[in-house]
Length: 197
Image (cartoon, rainbow, N blue to C red; front, top):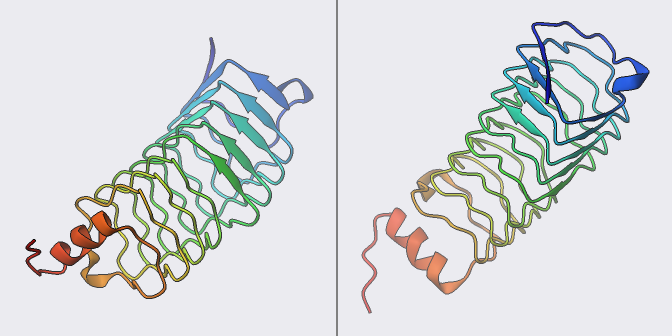
């Protein structure tokens, strides 16, 4: 895998519009036009994508590790089996995104408007979703272990079969969510009650 380090990109050359098996480390894509870019099995390590435009881009089995996406635009972006661990999406704009599988653990997504997004089967361990709009989201079989949901809006969200261990539900708005019986016991226990058979 070829590695590109410490480079600054305002836009990508035509040859990089459909990239495969490339590695970027400590590169800057601040404000870059990445619309319709396709990445396959690429790795971006500690790169800065602040303000970048990812509109209609597609990423398959790529990894964005500890990257910064402050204010980035993800209109119509597709992530398929991508690893996003430790990345920060503060003030990012999400509209019409599609996420299939992958690992979004330790990501910072506070105040994100992610309503009606399908997170089924996705790992989101210790993800920060403080005050996020998660109304109507699907979290079927997702791993939300120790994620932060303080103040998050979850009305209409489906969490059945999701891993909810270690979540503090005392500041979570639970009205209108769908859960299973096992999850009900976890939530009640988090609220300080004792569940007995």
